[in-house]
Length: 309
Image (cartoon, rainbow, N blue to C red; front, side, top):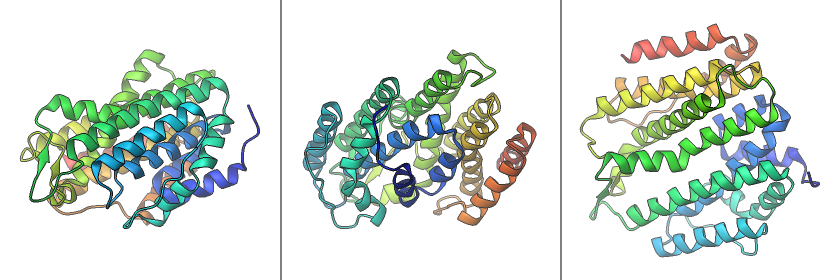
């Protein structure tokens, strides 16, 4: 592994651009923390480009192409100017893109290859997203017409991340999971897709105001919430199979936040919902002080899963 910029800078940047993900990263063993964090930051960078307010779709597609070229060349030959409406953390991501490339190049070859593979999936999903919705507006709405398109989208931008975590875990940790790698890959894929579906359901109102809809049948909210719950159940099974207590905590936290979000969406249909930061921190503290107890994680999941039904 090559010398890399100070990992404290990496984690500081991660904290500025993510609330719950940063909390999960702190719980990861060191051998996983760096590749997962680097992959996340680069994915957030491409997402910032794909969603850049004020830039026409053609310009965002061009910048996504430049982003992919920079990854394949292992250097950042271009500067990405922040556009109006970006959050401070998003501006930081664009400013520190060359440093993120340095972190990428510092990884072991196998880890770097895995990061590049998952980023290839993610950017492909983002390109499809811009092509489908890039010029949409409230006056000119666009939507996904088929369930297969939604399934493809959730896999490309999130399901592949579950596979990425799993491959890293089995390579770096001798007793990563009690289930075989093939089953963990399947559970991880379904888990990631469910987390993205929760995001779609949570942001449906905002997306509609911008003239886009990811749900082929948006009126059937109950069915989509049920699908999200099924995928989050896969996430629970994934987390409980992990051998490391730290990994269980890091992996379970998004599922526990997700099932709480689903409960809020059921309780307040059509309204913007968000699990409060204080509740997320309290949740993390409870499962951390139990040393990642499987019983505690399942109890936290079931109390909200049962309320949602």
